[in-house]
Structures are given as structure tokens and as C-alpha cells.
Length: 232
Image 1 (cartoon, one colour):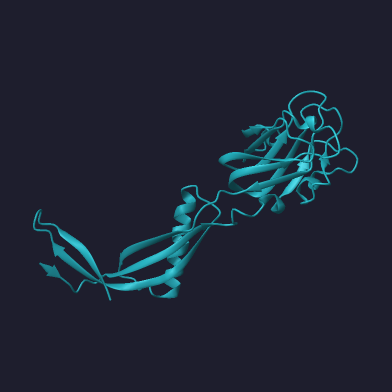
Image 2 (cartoon, one colour):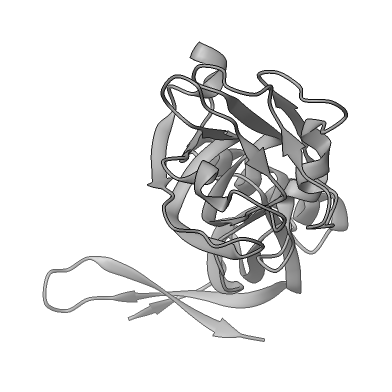
């Protein structure tokens, strides 16, 4: 049994979901750096200036020296790359801990730990996986007394998310081919995804909503009506 003439309009929809910025972008370049103390003019920002020949450095022989990067937003972080100084004493970086999170408690050093560094040679870079930890702040701290923290470059990267295409079908009496309505749909989807904890993504139409012919078929097995659609 087929029924037609419903007041509802069914539309199909494709939209793309992709993280923004891209996974190839070094997020550290968007951020702001500070550190626990300062040696000479080796300011914290030198560790994010893309030049491994300039470095940040804390005062000599202090307790628990730290360096912190504020990404200005919370991201899922895939990996962090640290570059050691090239001129001398690379062992000073041994025991340095990388922490990631959204808290500024204890200057951000109480956030979850991603990794501990050992054996990074002079002038070399080490890439550590942080398993998509989420946070706004990336801290590097060396626990203990009489420590010096020197960092020549910090890079932060997102996971390599893939673009996702989703097709959805709506049952509605509203004309979703209207641009104002289609934009409203994207805004509501974004709000719903954000409420579930997702962030840093972009929703775009790959194909605007299309009308399809709605029909209902009676399921002979249980006597229930089942919606079916047919593209115009």
C-alpha cells in the first residue's frame, strides 16, 4: 500500500566536517609564550620564532623552571616537537616534562603529562606523541633544584583528521532549499556538535538540500507504515 500527498518535504543533505586549522600547521606560531624567569635576553618567544639558532632560557640554577605556550584556544594535540640547543650542554634538557591541559593551576604545570625527555642531542629535535590530548596550554618543566631550562624551538600539531562527508535526510514542512534555512541548519548542527565537546571544526555544504518525493509503504509483517524516499 502506497500513500502520497504528505504535507512534509524530505530533503537530502551532504556536509563536510573538517578540523580547522590543518594538521600540517604548527599551532605554536599562533600562540604566546611565557617562562618562569629570564636569563639575559633569551625570552620565551624565542622558542616559537621558527629559528632553532635562537633559544629561550630561564635564570641559571633555579627550582622547577618552566616554559608555557598559550595556544589561545583548546585543541586536540597529536604531537609536540622540541629542539635542543646546539652550542653546548644538551644534557640540561634531560628530565624535561611536557604537560598539556586547560588549567593554569601551578602555572599550568599540574596539567596532564604527555612525555619526559631524555637524551636529546645538541641541535637535535625530538617528536613526541601526545595521543590527541586536549588543551590550551603546553608546558615544558624540569622538576628539581638547580636547573636551567633552555628551549630552541617548540612545535605543536593537530591530529591528521580526515574530511568527513555525511548524507542526512530530513522530514520537514520547511523549505530547506531556502539559503537562510540551509544556513540555519549548519548553525544548529555546529551548536549541537560543540555541546558534545567537539571544537575547531568547519561545517560546509558540498551539496545544497534537494527535494525528494516522500512516500509511505505499509509493512505487511507488522502493519506499521515505513517512510521511503525517491529523488526527484
